[in-house]
Length: 76
Length: 364
Image (cartoon, rainbow over all chains, first blue to last red; front, side, top):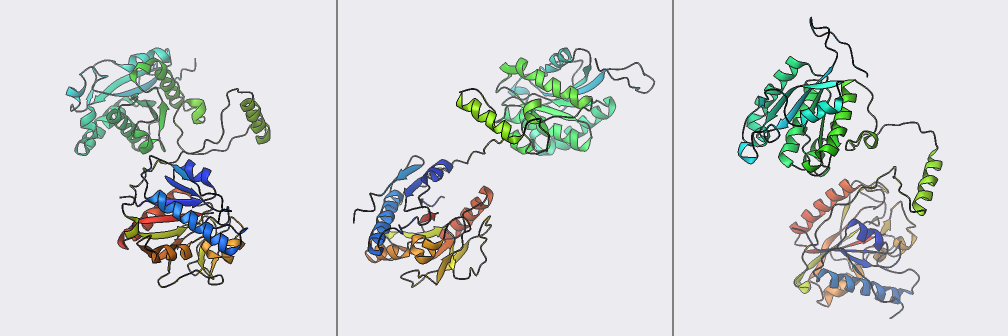
């Protein structure tokens, strides 16, 4: 009955440890879906990459806690 | 040593402590599964592990009566009153100093039977009681909170290693001696905490533990960490372009002023916020009230917590079926596991009712 869920967080070690099955590394501790150090358009592009990675995870069968990472936020 | 002098009616020469022992049909010698339906009875003489207990007590205590019941019979609700009546009659006649059941090792029905009877004797007949079983026996979570359950080996192959622990605790209970912590007496932790004095300060004990750990020596933690329940992964989404996705954050994003008064820490609730027709979450309309991190960045751009802007773009492009009409939020600091489970279950119900078939959870 479960609904597939992706956990987006910078604290991936905890997420994986407690058993979240689809984990996407995101942003920094205070901004999981962004990066305050980036200029706004770059930050939004990075956010999009994080979410697209989340969508990928949602469409993938995983055996257990699995970590997804986004490429360097510096890549436009 | 330590034999009590007591007067039992006119027979004031009896000095030994007395126990009553409960076992199942198998240990009573009637057979295994074929005899599991037999009812409550009293063994003629002393049979089974009681012989081992008597040897271990070496004259200080002895089993006065061995009682038994079939593992299927005792676990059927309809028979429980009859079994209780049988146990009560024997306990009232014998007036034992302690009641012992099992040990049941990893046998589920026998374990539940032992724990049930032990619990009944302790709680309703007022006689100290002890049983024993393997830590994973299903009876343990049901009864360990209020009962002494000695930690035994997994199977009866370990009877000779397990029985001494049962015998020792039973003797202490019979003598009404104070019972120490689980690690000292060999029973399964009950979850109760008692303060005790130590000769060394916490700092000394911690440093000693660290030194031992660094030197590869064995050490015992004073605070065992709980494990987490394993939740199997949900099956993947089949067609993401037709899937409505829900957003939830534990980063504490709420409408300005926190109208639902979500707690900033140790939250017990989550809020549900309507985002129909909204293309973006604006600074000044939403804020983060989470008590566990610097919320400046999040409050300056709520999308850092709830990525609505990107989700709307993806929906407009046909990449996803849509975004749920609401986002959910709570503060994920000090939220206990039980509450979190309940919140998750509640949220799942809401999603299902709203046709939301996938979710993205953002955590700080």
